[in-house]
Length: 125
Image (cartoon, rainbow, N blue to C red; front, top):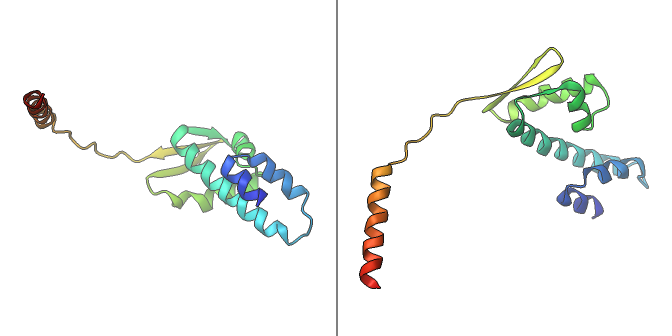
């Protein structure tokens, strides 16, 4: 229960601490699942927040111990969001976002509707 509470609160460091203090080795399975969920949530936020991140910073951010594990994580996580492509160039991971065409807002129609509502409201009052 405490792991779920820590996850909902965003206290990810407490979950890592729990990994080191498990009462039974069987609990590691559940803690590893929580770590995967945490990494997934952090990855989705990083895609939106950054254009690129250094691999060193990513290892710390995603709580990964080695560069080999990080590369495995990058390969497995890349297809999760088809709108953002992850590319490693040098010592940085770049998040390339696909361009969506912006939907045009029918501003003249919106202005007309707003004026019509204002006129009707004025008649009621």
